[in-house]
Amino acid sequence: MNNDVSDDAATDDLANQRPTTWSANGWTARIIKNEDDDGWAVEMTAEGASEPSLVGPWTMGRDKKNPKPIDASSFAVLVRGANEVGARAEAQRRATLHRSVTVDRSNGRRRIDVDIVPDEDDPHAILTVHDSSGAVLTRSRVAASFKLNGQSARAWLDEQGDDA
Image 1 (cartoon, rainbow, N blue to C red):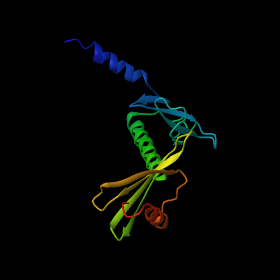
Image 2 (cartoon, one colour):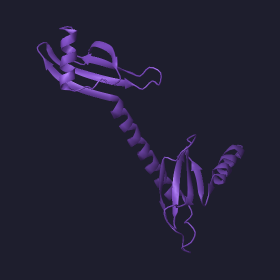
Image 3 (cartoon, one colour):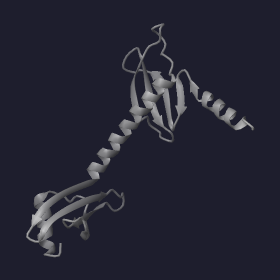
């Protein structure tokens, strides 16, 4: 059995892991001089990104001058933190682009969703009405500035008639 491939992979992993810079699992951790004080900071940058996703303080080494080297466990913690920051940012982005309200009508409960399409040339939103079982009753294009709340949903449904 030839082990050249696994030996090459292990060598590549070691080449990407230096005391002040580690790269693995789509992330690069790099120790930098902290601009706010005399200490050090670490920045986590996702592969292909131009800006770091996470920047935080880094521990001084034993000599109290140089940074502590990055090791496997600290890199794993940094990756986990950067992934959590990314997940929170994505959840916030989704929350700003999607709204949902439920209103009671004489013909049953309706859930109204508005999903903003942040197109640079043609920003708009899609308003979708669901019945109480979740089936789509109607879908319409509205202005990206449409403010969905209980009152605006009722007014929009009143304009559409009993089919919505």
